[in-house]
Image (cartoon, rainbow, N blue to C red; front, side, top):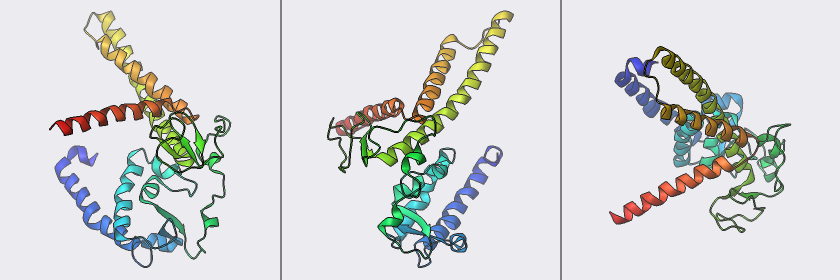
Length: 257
């Protein structure tokens, strides 16, 4: 709201606070000996790397700015755990953990108290995947194994990721596209309603082509979001295929230039 009424002024103020107050505070405190901000110290938690060691200033900096990813997607990055260690999105990408202060850090601590399939599946809706026992799974062919690599041993395509991370992405993708789909349903209803009124009054309304695009986007987003929530990967594959095509074109353009 403030951005709308005073865009340059409030934007500069907001950015200045983030860069010159919040960023140094979080990055310096989390990389210091206490390993956490004052709030974390009061609640008895600290930030570590994946081995329980103190993180560097560079990693703390990355963790701070990666919080934007967790916040931007309707705060789902904070609500949906992204690994068996219950990491948020920014913790997963920064390679950090938030743990209780004073614990004896060990491999056993990294094991979840709740099986990961309950963390990333919807009870009574999702069926446990065939390769739930495997640590890695292919996005494209659903092949699963415990071998850690970037390309799938079965189909050879890039997209061979940790099973827990894959389910986290599906849950995030499903939540976002379902919300967007519901908004598009609301938009489509009013656009079609107004078009029918315009036709009765003999006025020029919303073009049929625009209405068709809105309906197509509604079906794609809502259908893809709901299917992702129950573990289907077709929307993720579609997004990855589109990103691969765009990335390939950009690479070829760069080589020509």
